[in-house]
Image 1 (cartoon, each protein chain N blue to C red):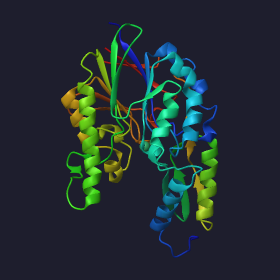
Image 2 (image 1 turned 30 degrees about the horizontal axis):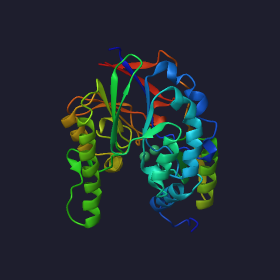
Image 3 (image 1 turned 120 degrees about the vertical axis):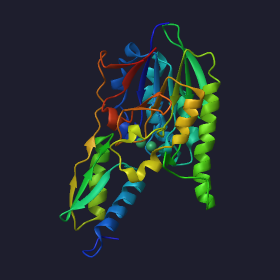
Image 4 (image 1 turned 90 degrees about the horizontal axis):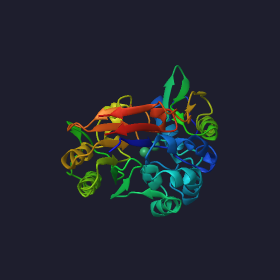
Length: 89
Length: 242
Ligand SMILES: [Fe+2]
Ligand SMILES: [Fe+2]
């Protein structure tokens, strides 16, 4: 169901979260969805660029009337260097 | 006995789109660690095909360093968790599902690892109980059962010099700082910490709380580290014990 001007923001957020959890391209439960000033913001991290792009597609399809801002980051996978060790005593 | 170096990560959420993205970052892991533990959410939706991709990414590191994993909630999504575990076992990633094992480090220390997925329920003063509807009872009973199993697994590691509890869900709320309070009961349970404190351990490693923080401690004083990828923001963390 596309969003309508009368649909309260909270229900739009719920719908977007369900769509992100179920879409097999992302299955993403850890993206935060907020709506402020009529704009929809997505924050959090994912593990691949493909998933980050898919999130924009999924949410724009779900909310065609909203200005969608995908601020999700792709997590850094850089290997730590040898000195980057925490000693636990 | 020389110190034991533990490399740890969680929440790699491997999918078909992850091929080639992980292996290059584990290239030097064997130089820095005696064991490698992966704390669940190995795959995006729990498909054997996704596990196959991850197996390809981990095969080299698992051949060089004893590598262990537990499953996370994502690995259960397609009801194929047994196959996910089998695919990983085939490349030498030992999946511990309510099981314990001991390996010897290069420095001659016996490293015991007890692995369970864990589950939710919440923390002191704000937790679910086995009361009311069957669904609610089942929710908390699942956590209790896993916690009992974890305690038995840790207790079985009598010959280990250091003991590691490997979980997906959080045993304390310290490492959830940054997550919304409302979802804490879905992120972990104090029952896991209670089991760990009763049996004893040197380190607890978990993931699942992508928005949480790295460091915590159980009420009994055991180090807890949340190694979810978005929390550590690197391929893995290394902890030195003993
Ligand atoms: Fe996760
Ligand atoms: Fe998880």
